[in-house]
Image 1 (cartoon, rainbow, N blue to C red):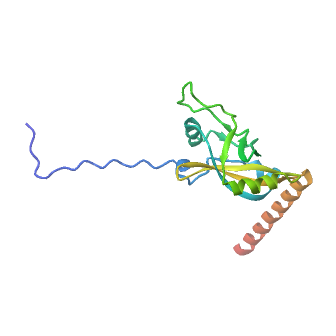
Image 2 (cartoon, helix red, strand yellow; image 1 turned 90 degrees about the horizontal axis):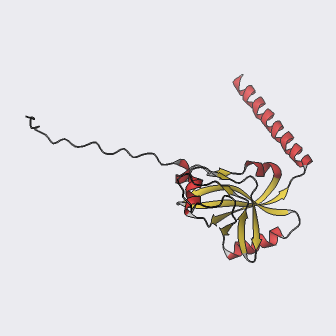
Image 3 (cartoon, rainbow, N blue to C red; image 1 turned 30 degrees about the vertical axis):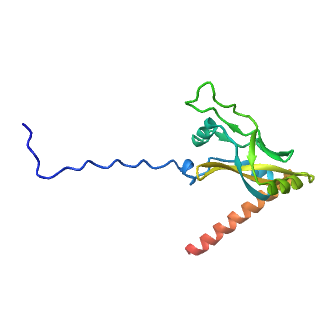
Length: 175
């Protein structure tokens, strides 16, 4: 027979699992690293994205790619084209298409500004990153001007010179 204990035993409280950094908004879901290399990024805007449920879940899993994506303003609406969001792993027949056109949610005044800027010669809309804010997927759009090859080399030279200068300062501090 079991012995009766003199004091009540409390069960251990369940340990809370740490939240996914992408879902909590502390880390970006997708970053377009080639955007800064191929374009001069002039202005940035934050836009919501109209998504389906499986697309949101795929973005949380890190299956989004913005490398070839671009933005388009047409008939007073903004769209995100060519953004690849992979199929959701636990999806069914109703899973989304990976490269479908997605609507960007912006205020009318912002759309008017973007329309004026994109009609200028040489300017385009490039998505630079996808991230979560308050549980909603946001897209950072940049108004960008394309770089020529010599611009890219000049940027690389400048970056290398800055790196060498920082290294020289660090060496002088050590001695």
